[in-house]
Image (cartoon, rainbow, N blue to C red; front, side):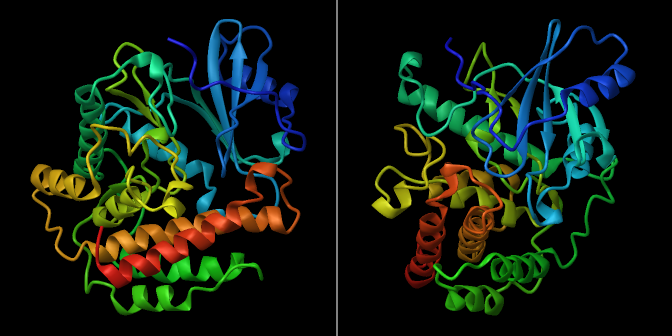
Length: 354
């Protein structure tokens, strides 16, 4: 199987102090030998991810981006804590080391074992020669894993203080609206109508409380090398929390683009959600309701929220590029994605469709 999660040379301006990292890791992991080869994963648009390849051990380092950034979306300790707590409950990487000492590389960071297996993006590799049945199996396993996550007893795994479920919906709506104002750039519409609709249509209370990932996508999962229809490890826990699981499902369906969705939605495809055999958004909602017994009435609110939240995340990334705090050319068109997502949220409010 070809490598589908390759690394590249570390981007200019995002270099690490390798000697400092090597020193602290060898104190924490006495069996670590040799010097690491350091490369970078190119796909991350938020926190930065590096491969640390020692002669006898492959690891991954995560750190916040350079430049001004919202603390809430780049808290390395939260990623480390939730993955450590969930080990044995759902598939997550093995965590190894965390520090908030900025004297080492100028920011907090953590290290985990590298989970071996393919990571796919907008297409299923042709060489896999999958039938629709195999694609469907991946889809069902992917959403069953989300069901499993939402079913974890967070108190039992030591995550009872990981967040405050009460008032979660209100905090998310007001918080993401506030973040959009902070990240707004003059070339982007303000979408006041979308923001107001979300405020005015918030449910009276949460539908439940669970550990939520916040960014659950197929391209945030390492698949099993021996059977890529199975999940090896879920990555990118940077905005995980305790909250309403309906909000998490809304976030995930915001990324779930059908093959027959309009062209402006196709520009946002980051996972093979439109491949023959994948469930539709409505089928996923029905699957989730069947597996959990959850009340999914009024789900349109959670779906529109997911779209708007994604628009804000994209705008935060774009704003750093626009303001000269990041010169990665991948982000120069992110403003167009913000606009497309805002328009999509507006369309879904109007039509009431998933």
